Image (tube, rainbow over all chains, first blue to last red; front, side, top):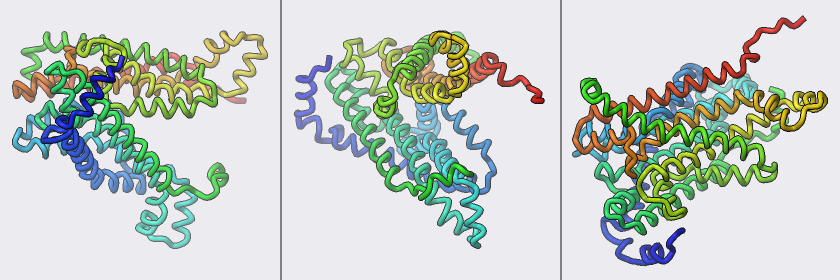
Length: 228
Length: 213
């Protein structure tokens, strides 16, 4: 069972919180890598997903990307990119590898957000004389926002999980405690680090879920939806 | 490619381990997910969704090394990996299994009841076959991601295809890592296609053309 005394001792030791490989720094590093990767990917993936949904072209690409990406091990992608791009640029290559991992869920979220808008809503917007840009800006983006944020949610989970492996390619992040602890057979450190990782992941997931619930624009009369 | 030809027996051995640590979780997890989806009372469905969603979000390496502290297994070795992967399969398939049974048309079940079938007969001969398309769809997602996640087991000492990533990185052989990625990709895609085919063969009535008068 969980050895609470050893865990408590590990968490209450200030030594484990301070310095380059202290928890604070590792958590900061973990989240920085995660957010940089998501932002880099989102700049391309979200507009692309919205565009594919808007024009209705390239759906096969989105579907294919989804099933292909599930079969590719993120760990191998990360290791291969870091090795091929060189150890000197490992920060850059890790961010690029992570961005590649977040790309499919971000694009799928944006795409399905736009395509699931009932056609009569787009039609009535066009009938009012909205230009294509106004349609995207005032109709499609607000209605797709919940789904777009849903894409970010999946992307966050995947990247936070993959950053756990970053110490294996010479970077930090909370996974450092697991890798180092396993090597030194310092099991309280392993358990403590994985608890911190679980807290970061699940809290982030729930927070994005809350944002999704409150930021998403819902249609006023859901009864009308069923007639479409 | 040259690296693969020179080392193919080694890769084949790793692939065998890889399959053995992933197939057990896929099969056991799928069966448990179907059972859980069937026995959960309606008012527990939403809480179960929340809990399983949170479990599914836990990074695999963190789950691999938390299990020993929780259930007293060894920190390294395949046991934790198999248990953790089973948990992931249950967490991801629970939702699709629940939806698959939910989509079985109510009149069909009522018809079966009125012909005098027992609830056991209804489950095996009506509900389960009708739910196959949904179950297979969920299983395909779970199977592909299990094959891919299993590679992380290499970090805790399981000599599967993920070992090629760690070894290839340490020895600076990109071909070795790429071989691992491609091998896992091929296994996952083959399994996916196989499951799709099995699903089609199991539900042949869906593809029979009926001439309505």
